[in-house]
Each structure stands twice: as structure tokens, then as C-alpha cells.
Image 1 (cartoon, rainbow, N blue to C red):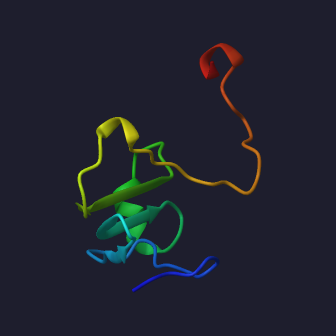
Image 2: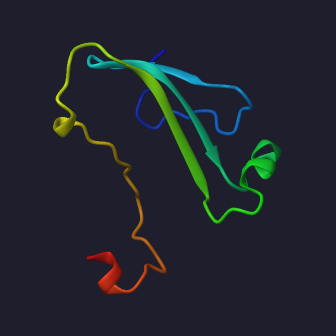
Length: 88
């Protein structure tokens, strides 16, 4: 299954992974977000983190480790960031 930009995906499904495939990678992802649905409460209890993303899969061809990147895109600026000397 492929997801289109702006399409909703499932969060916090117990044991529910989301299969995905790109021209370079085939795998699955599990996403947990705190305070969304009852399935996340036990996992995040006592923890400061608010989300978890786990990706499992296989590259379709060999990739040098130094060429791998992960990241996220956020639509709003961050609030309450640590002091500047920590962020350097």
C-alpha cells in the first residue's frame, strides 16, 4: 500500500504495523503518539516522551551508511526549546 500526501495513517494500534515501500526500501512502521487513544496510555506511562516511531525493513540495494538520513517535517515552529548553548 502506498500513502498519498495528506492521507491519514493509523497511530497506536497494538501490534499493528503499516507496510510501506519506496523505490529504495521495503518495510513496515509502527507509530505511537501519547494522549491519542487508549492504546498509548500504558506505553507512555511515567515517560516524558510524546511519540515513538519504529521502522523495520530492508534496503533493496546496498547503501553506504554515511548516505542514510532520517527526519521529520513539522508544520509549526517549536516552542519551549532548551537554551541556545544546548541547541548548538
